[in-house]
Image (cartoon, rainbow, N blue to C red; front, top):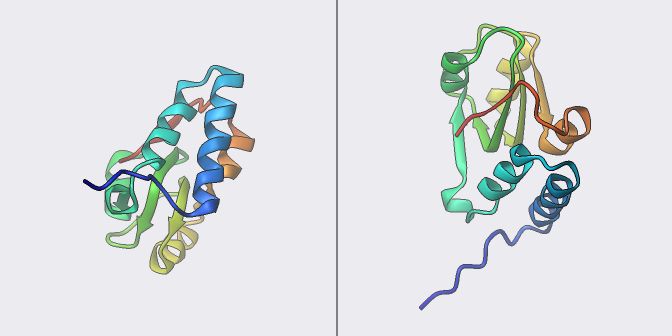
Length: 121
C-alpha cells in the first residue's frame, strides 16, 4: 500500500508550515483552510480558469486560489488574485485588465486575517 506523503516541493512545504503557524498565532481559520488545500498531492491540487474567476467575482475583489490559475476564458474587471502559480496566458490577461497577480505569501503579509477574501476551488 502506498503511503501519502503530501507535497514534496520544499517551497510549498515551507509555505504550508508558515500558513499553519500564522493561523494559530492569529487564530485565523482562513489561513488554516488554505494550508489544508495546499497540503493535497499535486494531482489533486486546484486549477482554476479565468472564466471561473470572472463568474464569481466583482470589480476590486480579492481572490485566493490554492493552486494554479489557468488562462482559459476572459477577465473583464480588475481583481487581485493570489495563487501558488499562474500560467503565462493568465498573467497576461490579468495585467491587461489592470488586475494584480500576487503570491499567497504576499497576501498573508497584506491581509493575514483574510478579511473580504474569497477562496476559489
